[in-house]
Amino acid sequence: MPRRLLSLLLVLAAVLATAGCGSALEGVRLTIATGGPAGVYYQLGNALAGAWERDLGMPRPTVQTTAGSVDALGKLESGEADLAFAAADAAVRAFGQQRPNRRLRALARMHDDFFHVIVRAEVPATKLSELRGLRIGTGSAESGTRLIADRLLEQAKLSAADLRQSPTDLSDSIVALERKELDGFFWSGGLPTRAVFELAKRQKLRMIDLSDVLTGLLDKYSSVYGQASVPASSYGMDNKPVTTLVVRNFLMATEALPADTAAALTEGLFEAREDLIRANAVALSLDSRSAIETAPIDLHEGALRYYRQTKT
Picture 1 (cartoon, rainbow, N blue to C red):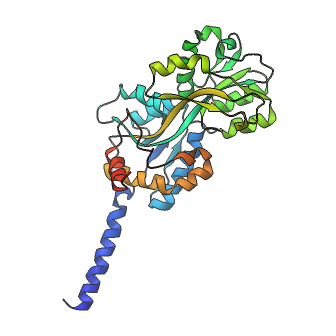
Picture 2 (picture 1 turned 90 degrees about the vertical axis):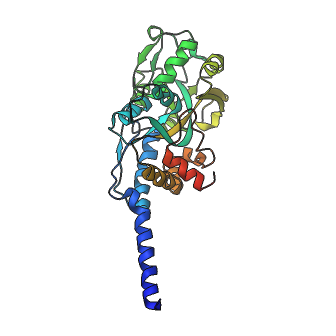
Picture 3 (picture 1 turned 135 degrees about the vertical axis):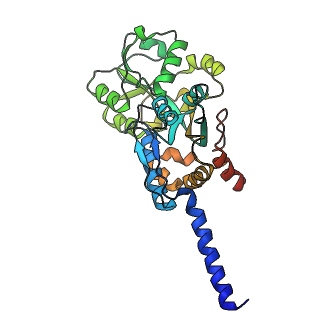
């Protein structure tokens, strides 16, 4: 074969190969369901959207705010969103209520959230049961925070009537606490959560230890919850380290997402790790070895292909 013709064929092959690599995302427009603007999901979602646009040559995904995990999963299952950040407990609960052809699948385990029970420093309560009669922000009705709050309150033998509950999201809870319209609030988020950290600079706070109510909850929901110690230094509070509940967080899709697209997005997720860390330090825990730990939610076929190729 003439050398010139051979050279032309090699160039053509390279061009076709390059075009093939980008075909999975050509013209793909996505919506990512996150959480409220003060939360970790929203910060990570915006960072990821920017990185995917830059690195994968796709239109910037739309970042959609939601009331939290439950709301985000509802939008994912209805087709209003293509991807969603969600806590494992909400994902597992939704797993049994799936629609045909939109079965939930995970792209990755992202990070772990810590459940915060925050009160103003002058509030005398030291455990969950002592919040009876206080004004507490319990999280939006369709949030992962509210899901955990309800389960913890049940363990503490408290009902909605026992708390002067306010179903506010994190941003509204912080404003209300500073106005002394709330005595405290619940929040499930990364450690530290930036908005809570900034609040602790302006307002003396304490974090309630949950040791006395965790055993029963962990026995009942061992597949999605764990426990961990939160150092007082996390928020510069005066109290000692506290024990609290931990829940995993997933980047979710459904089977409706094509496998090639899912594989490319999963690869792009790890390429965007530094962008995610700059958005929020919780992304330091993002690792391809632990990212596959999404049981009992199955990995998406495309994500599984990526992990197998990288020999995770």
